[in-house]
Length: 219
Image 1 (cartoon, helix red, strand yellow):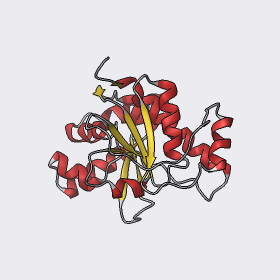
Image 2 (image 1 turned 90 degrees about the vertical axis):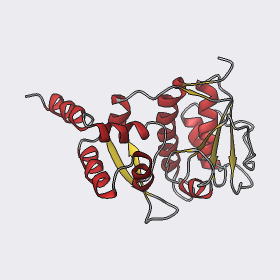
Image 3 (image 1 turned 45 degrees about the horizontal axis):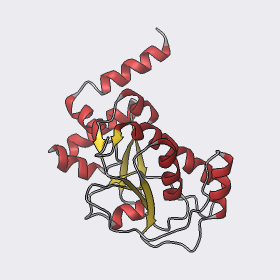
């Protein structure tokens, strides 16, 4: 039997269980911890671990340790998982991307979103830097993305209709009491330009997957 057919069958089998499908659907828009998923879905932690293991083995989900607290683990959909599922439609007045310094990842996300969606976007930092990282600008240029005029700025309190998305683990923990989505993107700062390209590519995949499903109230 064709190996690709076997792989696809394994994915469908993993998603054929109601709990595992619910876990995967919960991860379509946002990375989550097993603890938060257990609480949301009413699934005991040991059963959540069992189902997560099957999803990981099928290549639908991966585990990613938090950069802010290495004891904290995020679950993320893989490319395979995203292709197998369709995000639900979301209505938002605007999208606000947040990272700690607003010097790379959230700037990438804002620029990408503006390029791909009519829904307004902005970005901010919980502790903004003095400038956008020069390697972030270089990485953006290499991918044909413009960061012209981009400057780090503090996170502003937006309207309740805004869709807030954190793109770094520290910001996710700082905003734990504020409703938001989270994309666990490794911090490229202090690393070579290749790390900025990897972060940009990861954010591009997320934006391309989700932006078609987000519409404004006026749409």
